[in-house]
Length: 115
Length: 110
Image (cartoon, rainbow over all chains, first blue to last red; front, top):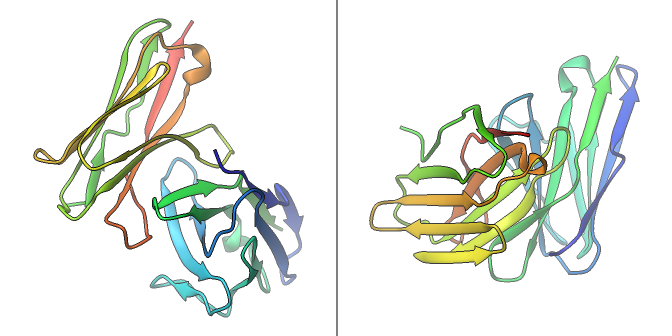
């Protein structure tokens, strides 16, 4: 299957700092990437849909100024959590859509802890 | 009513048993159906992908889709301890967003 790389896998930061998470499709071009947030023992919650070369589309209730998404190329999307606070601590997962089959391949996730 | 219903479990079965995981859905526009496996603190891994109705087999895994009943299943034969994980069904009508089930936590007991 297609490979999606996500970095870092774990980050601990102080409250008020910004954190950038990278998502790369390694062996295919992804015009669309997705960012999810997952709480313990819960399913994935879509935060935003990222299309290459255009602004991301955010789900209702997700602060676009808080969670900055950039999709500058067909293989890279980034999520920046700005001025992070303890309530932003969570597991963030990206995915990339491959071709026309509507299959999403997921990264390994990033565990963010804000102190 | 949720668009996708999935029994959250937890489900515990002995090693070697056949496991049956199921999801029901209400949106008749769904055409693409997926099963993902997620280990603790990892991202979901695609196991099976099916378009429209029918069966698909890959090794010990079989996916079934019955669009008339709006019901999908994943069967795991000869279950192994390494199969212990959370299994998520997901589906879409082609508008790119996936709708997920809540996930079923499965434990295979050696």
